[in-house]
View (spheres, rainbow, N blue to C red):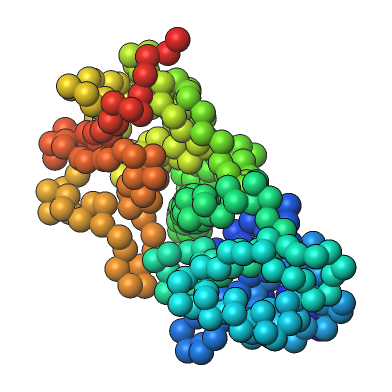
Length: 355
């Protein structure tokens, strides 16, 4: 049994870090070894090693599943150095230094042992050996990478769940309605949803944990990219971006996809949606409107709130998280009965006129 066989089991209480960690590990040029310490654990245990890390051990495949951090580090650096490394690490929260490798002829190697996921209840540690400049950058940017990866995963799961729920509802209606023409209408809607899903999956870009590329893009292109994955049908969409560009990654388009999805799914009689810009002082306001029923005042106060325990993640909470990641904020200031009005506020440093 290899040391990585228990990887998924170790992360039983963390939905996405396992996949994100594997991608992160493979993006490292240097040997990278990861440890996790969750609830009920007295000491960090081996979680995952990339290929270069396995080569550091004389017989790394025989390291026991969930090996204690002290055993792994002793195998690499010997017992005396292991005690010094761990004592410094647990005292200061990080160890950096040049140390003698036990199993290598090379004289010394630079290493870093540090925690990667501040704010999480499960502690994740990385030991990187023979550190390169690219790996230093990976370590510094890991929390933001993980947040983007988790948001991308959660938004994708949310969107696909919505499609599946809609298909299930229309199938139930097909079974309930005996009139052929009504059934055909339901089947046509199912067909449109399946096409939406196909476009969505086709357009999903893989998130590279070594760094999501942030590019300046015209707002109209960001909005169009999101709307391209949804069947608007008879709903007319207008976009007036005022010639502004925003720094964005692929997640930002999902904001407008989900706003439009909500308009069509919950607005009841939406015939048009619009996106336009207004500048107020040093702030750019991106205003999304539809002509549907609007937001009931009784739910407005918790519109962007995180889900309660056991509830599914909802789109507006995820939208708020994505915008926060970009340095933006969002509020809803529409009038019930007259459609929604979402206002996305963008600070001066985060927008510019297209060149």
